[in-house]
Length: 71
Image 1 (cartoon, rainbow, N blue to C red):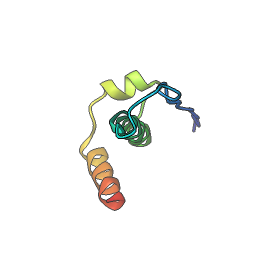
Image 2: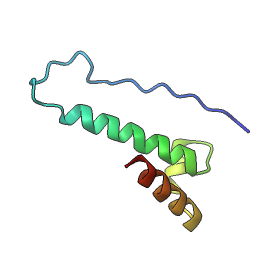
Image 3: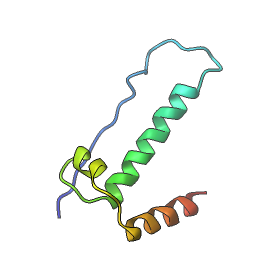
Image 4: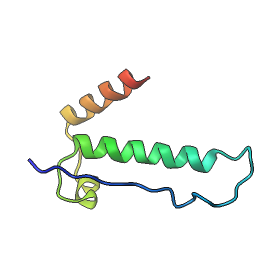
């Protein structure tokens, strides 16, 4: 098994935004969570490979169960 560790940084950090504008922050966190989910369930040596491979029915079911448990 190969363990991969990625550090994601917010490229918008330090950029001035309106006090009520949390849309960019919310989008960033949502995207990070989706990528983490993909890496957990989808095989591949790179993110590009993981995103280009179709998901199996088992992978889809496991992901659906994970998202249901989060909610």
